[in-house]
Amino acid sequence: DRLLDIRKHNCNPMTMKVTYYKKPVFINQGYMQWLWDVDGKRYLDFFAGIVTVSVGHCNTKVTETIEKQLRRLWHTTAIYVNPQMQEYAEKLASLLPDPLKVVCFTNSGSEANDLAVLMARLHTGNFDVITLRGSYHGGSPQAIGLTSNTRYKYHIPTTMGCHNTMCPDVFRGLWGGSHCRDSSVQTIRECSCSPGHCQANDMYIRELKEMFATTVPDRIAAFFTEPIQGNSGAVQFPKNYLKDAYQLVREKGGICIADEVQTGFGRTGSHFWGFQGHNVLPDIVTMAKGIANGFPMGAVVTTAEIARSFAKGLHFNTFGGNPLACAVASSVLDTIIEDKMQENSAEVGTYLLTELAKLRDKYEIIGDVRGKGLQIGVEMVKDKASRDPLPSEAMAEIFEDTKDMGVLIGKGGLYGQTFRIKPPMCITKDDADFFLAVFNQAVQNYME
Ligand code: PMP
Image (cartoon, rainbow, N blue to C red; front, side):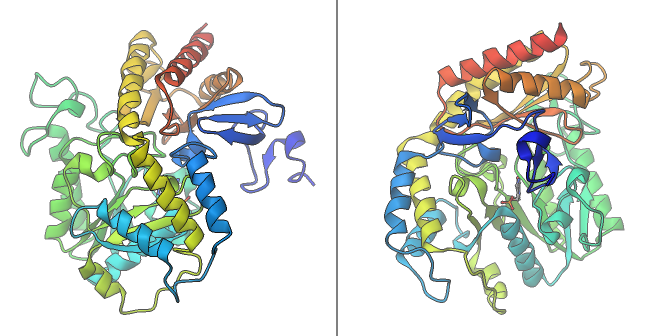
């Protein structure tokens, strides 16, 4: 009874948790970057259904594709192939660099990550997986193992063989802030961190080396990271961290997996895939969320060599690669390209980052503004000197106020201290200005 009366008790029957907001927001309708609740109130959506609605709610082109495909074919299973699956797999593979050309379909990010771990273990013959502290890689038992963020863990034995190394967070990490040996570099974010140059990168790599010496000697199957940590609040790494870490992992016999569930499909603006911003080439790339704009879909792309080890067994996924999902994903991809949404992410994202940085300079409680394209984090602190996280009640107040003024944003971070700004990739500069005005007002209201 308590669960059923959502409006009265403000409880989400799915998660059995009180919803994000003091009063639940009952969303009834959407179009592109806009959402309407059951009472007709309009919101500018700056969280995109958790970084998923890449080309806008009910995007007309995608909706037309769904309608057409609904009348043609929904489901066959992978016993058969279908043109939608073939066409989409080819399109997707063409967007990844050689030798990442073998595509496997799943229905979610968790499933994609589970599959990637299985592939890594089969290919290397090793078992252990290293992820970064603060990471979120999904909610299935294996993906919970990969996840480090304690808020999502149940601390039951799902974590066998999964180890966390220090997250090289350039703001909050142990060596975050300005610890570069080059005094002309203001923060390590701007540093090119060549070996022996930037203290922070050296330290994090040394920590990884220590893990190999003490925890996973010669047993590493995979090193698993996002290019920009999403749920932890758009956490960025020193420029050369992934390059150096990948090299070390490969020397130890492991393979490298990029979780592009949030960062893929042009969201980071400058590149189609987040890993490209780090100058690395993963052995496996996993993706979901923005792949199909909210339609359940995920994928793993890997090399023929890794796929061969995996093909020794009989892996099966009933819904994975169904014609309806593939048609939707294909149409989403076409829309991203035809409507220049990656370019828009770069342009509006850069504008947002510049304007948010001005708010950071204006307010003592905005500690850091970071990200790339439309994958942005605004980390809130008690004060700039301590960098202590802004308490949750204060976060809730600003969050609620922003919603009341008509903008939906996200929240994340290890301490729930970071606002996540990840709108559909179709937003305009005017939308950015509206959000900025609302967010500025909400912070100001809190300060008064
Ligand atoms: N990886 C990352 C980086 C994610 O953000 C998420 C979802 N928040 C997942 C994996 C899991 O995806 P899904 O919820 O589709 O299983």
